[in-house]
Length: 269
Length: 128
Image (cartoon, rainbow over all chains, first blue to last red; front, side, top):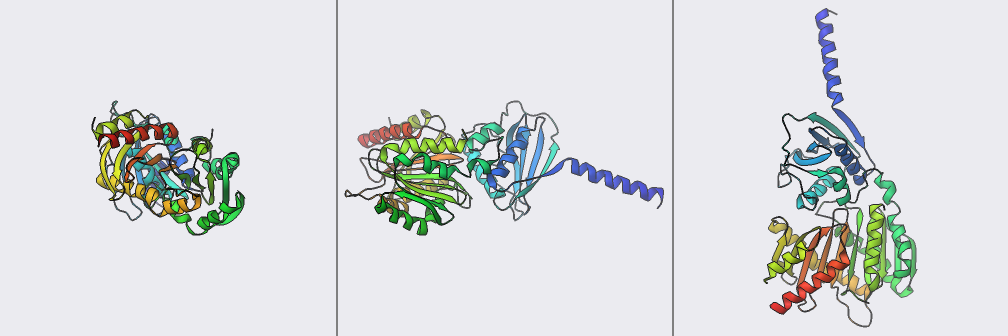
């Protein structure tokens, strides 16, 4: 091998190494776990950088990040390779309650729903960051989306439905708890159990649909309460995490308390 | 005070509330909406469709059948909570086809908000 060839090979190896330094992989068992990893990437980014997350199908989202805050979604492509368009792309984030934050949640859910790993590419951003752009902190995004930045979501939520049923046992007129479509426990007024079983066998998809943000979402954590005007009449509660679900008929006066319990369980507090 | 002002008062007095829409459930039309940022018509149509389904549609019928006691029960309130937000749908006590559709943060005080929303619905019905 000539000196010239040896030099070319070494240069090629150095270029490959340089690429690897700005790239790494993150993985997780589900959407929420991956979303938590993305937020941790943001939380660990101090200097202005462009960070791109690419799923196994080639779908991607690019973020402008600085000071542990997400400034904006600067671009992205769908799994089919089509450039993403719409209000989310290019507009500065600042208000955690803005529809842009909800839109980002939907877009991330879409990106993460069919993958268990992401390639992360991080590059320095040229030029100064506009000081008027405050963005949203990773912590506030985690709070808004019910994630704990410092814990593994899968472990936090796996018992959330069971814990809810246990916590509202005194307020429940009847309940049925399911793992996938199999009943794992039930109790309360026997006359009410039959209709609850019927719903759980035939109508689950309808209830799941209402936990989604938008069509196509893979919302696996949520609850829904339907009832007459607040007061003494009972309400129907449906709660879900992953394949664990529960239908509970709760007394009218306990709706508020049960919803508070759900929120506490989901916030991990 | 017109309807938009009433909706805006409800929204701005509730931390984390981004949208309050006054809708006609029978026609599936948002009649008036107050929002922190401009909302696309498709989003308003979509949230009104969810309200119609949860308060008057198949989901409401299923829930009503399960809850049914001697008195016929209609579904007047629906709340969905997920990681991103709370969505609250409340039927007017005066006009059965009128409803408020609200989008708020996930950690808001739902019970307090429903009470305020009911006052707003009553004021709208009184002024109509």
